[in-house]
Structure formats: C-alpha cells, structure tokens
Image (cartoon, rainbow, N blue to C red; front, side, top):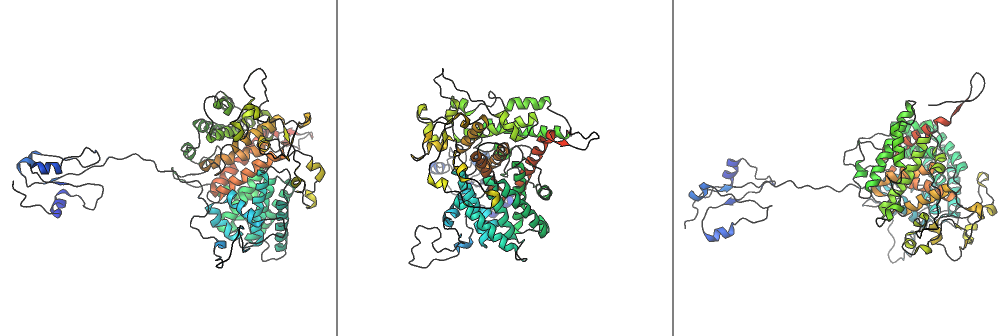
Length: 609
C-alpha cells in the first residue's frame, strides 16, 4: 500500500483553519486515511469521552492524502472554589521582630519560650511573661494582628505588657475565677504606672503607643467587667484622642482608631448606654465597604451588606435550621428598627416572626435533636444561636432592654419523676460525661465551692475604687457550671446548696448557652461564622448585665473581645458596622423606657419614639 507522498506543513494547516496553534483550549489531531489493520489499531478511537473523537468523511476513503483536522471542544466542568478563610492564621512567612535574634551556638534554650529574656519583663515576680505570651498568641493571634499591631506593641514595655493584660484577663475567665488573678492585677497596675509616667513627658503623652496601651487596659477591664476602672480609663482615653486632634490623626495604619472605635461601641452595648459621639461619628464614616459576592466576611443578623447571607449559607459549619433561624432573626431586627423609626409597634409580620423564632416546634432544642440523631459541634452552634435569638426576639416584641428580656426568655426548670428520661438539663454536661450513664451526670442545681488556697490568694491590693473584702469574696461560689464540676479535683468537694443559693432561671439559661458554646468547638471562633459568634456573645453580654453570676457575665464579655480582636484587623469596616447596628438596637429598645422632664405641670411623661 502506498504511503503518503506529500504531507501539508503545520503552517499551511493553521492558515487554512484559522486556529491559533498556541491556544491550549483545543486539541488537534492529524489522521492519515490508510486502510491497514496496523493503522486502524493505532488510530482506533478510545472509549474515554474526554479524548478527541475521530471523524471519518467520504473524502477520506477516496483521497488518502487528505488530513482531517479535529477540534476537541472540552465540556465545561462544574466546580466550586473553596471559600477563603475569614482570617489568615498567624505566622505565615511574616518575620516578627523578636525572631531576628540569633542565639549563640552550643547554648541550651531549655524549656522557656524566651530563654534570653529578649522580651520586656514585668516587675512582679508572679508574672510569667513567657506563659502569657503563649496564651496571647493562642487566644488572639492572627496574621493581621502580627502585621499591624504587634510591631508597635513590641517596641515599648507598656504596650507589650498591655497585650499580656488581655491574655491573663481572658485566661482568668476561661478558668472561671470569680476574682482576678495576681498576674492580671499586677500587670494592669504596672501598665497604668508606665502610662502615667509617659503622661509626664509632653512628647509621648498622647503618642500612638501610649494610646495603644490605654485601649489594651480598657479591653482587659471590659473582659473582667470592672465597671469603675473601665469608666475612668474611657474618659482618659477620650481626652487623649481629643488632644491628638481626633481619631483620624492616629497611626498604626488606621487600625488604632478603628480598634478604639469598635471597643468603645461594644462597651456602650454591653452596658446598654448611648455611645460617645466621637466614636459614633468615626464608626459611621468608616463602616462601609464593597465586597465581591464570593468574599468571606463576618456576616451576622446585624451585619449583612449583601442581599443574602452568602458566607453563612455557604458555610459547612452552619446547619440548615441555623441558616433559617439567622434569616428570621435578621428580618425581625430589620422590621423592628423600621417600625421604631416610623412610630409603629408590633405588626402582624413581626408577631409571626416572634412566634416562629421562639417556637420549639419550628426550632427544636438540642434535646429534641438528640432524640433523632447524634449531636455534632454544628448542632451546638445552632443551639447557641437559638438561645440568643430567643432573648433578642423577646426584647424586641416586649420593647424592653436586653437585660430585662433575659428573665422573660428564661425557660422554667422542669423535673419529671414519672419518666425514666433524664432531666433536660442533664444534656448540658461535659462531652466526656455525656456519653456515660445518666446517673453519673451531675445536676446543675449543685453549686461548686473551692477550697483551693490559690483562689484565696488571688486578691491583690489595688486602688481604692477596686477595693473588696477578701473574706466576703471568698465565701462566694466559684461557679455553678457543670463543666467545672466535671473537672474538679478532690480538693474541691461538692456541698448541697442552701435554698438561697439555687441558680435562678436566668443563670440556668446563661449556663446552657455557655455549655452550648463550649461544645461547639471554639478553636477558631467558629471560623467563617465568627461574625455570628460575635453577635451571640455581645447580645447575651448585654442581656447578662444584671445577672447574679459574675463568672457568666465575664464569660460572654471575654468571648466578645476575642471574636472582635480576631476580626477587626482584617475586617475593620464590618466590625464597626456590627457595633453601630447593635447600638441602634439598644437605643430602640430603650426608647419606651425614657422619661422626659419639663412639662408645664412639672410631672414626668414618657416619650415614645
């Protein structure tokens, strides 16, 4: 059989077809039309649908010199790009100042994190700088924190020790200390002393690093719910900012002004007070940003700049019921604020949403879910959202502050002796004990007393506005939480509580919410649902303002600060907008409780807005 005498060159083929040879989206094949069995076996079409199909024409059988150009059109394949993380983890190729030190050869670094004592040290011998530095990185560390905040914080002793104040205050709360530890009080006093010393020097009195140290003191006070010290530091900070020329004049890449703003607005929400004008104006001017539809942002019922929850609805950590509930409570908040501005009250739509949000048939508790399936950490996230939504919805429908709505939203405790099923509160136990027999679960009605001598020694002499009586403070129970009960040592016996020490409904509800959060995996602050966690904690933080349990009050304040710090350096506009919305809600809820004086007859009258 004759072979091909002439073969068209590749340039001729490209010129005849008009196809770019560098275009990688097409696959080209030249098929000789020979009839031999050998060639048929070589060029036999494959069954793989992705490969180029072979096309035979009538001209191929008559003219063996022709070549057929086959263009393979690949089918578009459906794929979804993984969502970007809401915050970038710490230490990813970014050199840090204290990493520039090169240790000497043949020198043992031992077990200490800072063996050469290159970091600023505290004066009090009970303060472990290395340990607190580790806690600070674990609790609050993100890449943006290391990029914007840490370089300035590591440049001065009072700013560095101020970051450790956050870590030790948060660590106290996580360990359920009813009094602040020695490290917390000692560090705070040292930072106050260093800031005061800088105030005597005009060149640095209102510098960025001095203001940074003060805002870190305020955050530690916020975590510990130390109201008197918090108010004092806030007034001083506002004076420093005014002397500097306003928030817009602050440095640290704009993150210092943003941090001061959202922390101050959060303080106003937690205390249910009107925000200071200087922070309200700056937050309003720096709370908008255009996001792409696929951008991962801290969405929540009080912050949704796009038409729908793109990030939350695409999250694998959010159950279908949680997504539906978040949409309902968001709609309820929007309608409530609109009715407040238009002097309307509780439309039928708002009532229907309230009935749906608070209905256990529409949104069952984890107790009901557990009867149908094994609970996961995502179910506990839903439970935390459900409890916070019930408190928010109750405040809206009754037009009362969140702190008053807590008692209305608290569920009465029910015990059934006729049924073999354990009480509903038994589900809120630690994960390890939850899998055991129900008789091993400790009832939450027990209070935990501590006889650990370290607790009694945690009192540290302080200024007059914080003085407490150690004897009276030591008599208070550390906590009524089942988590502490499970992890108690033999030195912490259990005593039957007196009737006056039984937790009330509000404390029980707050404890349920804390247990749900702790079961929900807090290692990444709910990751792409961190905005939802921030809304849950600040809402319940305001609701717990009048709670008898200081341990629980501090818990929600601490989580508010942790979620906010992790988000604010990468999403400053979103956090400002979130806090402004919460301030608007608090303002609207307090509208019916305002009293205006100055009428003709001298009597007080209510002013409805």
